[in-house]
Image (cartoon, rainbow, N blue to C red; front, side, top):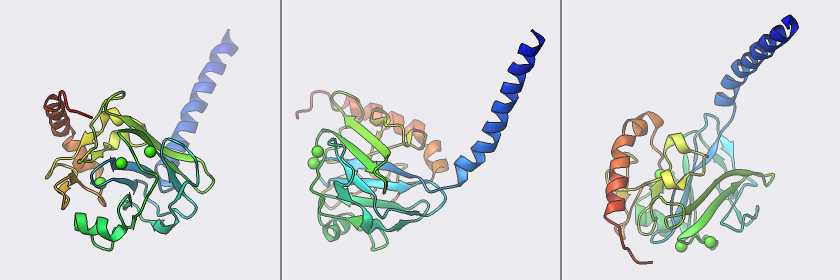
Length: 222
Ligand SMILES: [Ca+2]
Ligand SMILES: [Ca+2]
Ligand SMILES: [Ca+2]
C-alpha cells in the first residue's frame, strides 16, 4: 500500500518534470510551417506561414491536394522562410498573382500550380523526408466552414495545425487579418499572417462576421 502510493507520487512528479523540461523546448526550438489561408477558386492560392521562431528551409518540401502524395509539387523555390513569413503557392503565374494582389517582391510566390483545389479538397504539406507537416481537409458542404470561392479563409492562431476548416474565417476586406481586395474584387490577405495577439483580440468579431456570412449564403448554387 505504502509502496503503491509512493510509486504513484513518483510517477506523477516525474511526469511534471518531463512536461516542465519539454514545454520550453517545444515552444522555441524550431520553425513551424502551417497552412494559414486558402482560396480554391477565383484567385486560387494556398498560404503557408512559419509560425515558429526560427528560420526554416523548405528545400525538399512539397505540397499535394487530396491525393496525399509527397513530392507532387515541389516547394524548394521558397528557400529559407523567416519566422512570421508567409509564402504563397498560386494557380496563376507568380507575376500575375503579385499584380492581382499588389504584392512586392519580398513575398515569395510559387506560381503555375496545376495540382488545383476544388470545392471539397485537401491541402497537404510535406517536409523533405515526405512526412506530413500540416493538413487541411475542407468542404463547406460536408465539413462546414466558409466556401472559399472568390474569397479566402483564414486559420485562427488557436487552430493552426488542427485541421479544422470548419472553424476557419472567411476574409472580409479590412478585417483582423488585414484583408484587401484583389484586382478581381476578391477578399484575402496573401503574404501576411497577422500576429497572434492582434488576431486573438478580434476573434469574437470574426466569429460574428462568419455567422453573418453563413446566414447570408443560404441556398447558394454550386
Ligand atoms: Ca480551383
Ligand atoms: Ca484537387
Ligand atoms: Ca494571409
